[in-house]
Length: 96
Image (cartoon, rainbow, N blue to C red):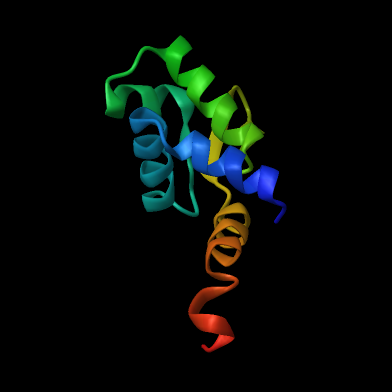
């Protein structure tokens, strides 16, 4: 992961609602959730939720798939893994 991508991901998670969304989606892996259900569970207006989901998606932390008439959102665990590896890459002077 490049530094710019890590900054985007960390910036996306630095906002409370987006952090709540991401944690909710991680809990609902692998099934994911529809945007409306995410908005209902977190008591956030749907248009505001759409903006938050867009920011998380652009940061590489959320993926979406169309299923019939719904869009299902899932945590991008590969993105989370890449961010985690970026953060600990130089940990402990290279010792495991």
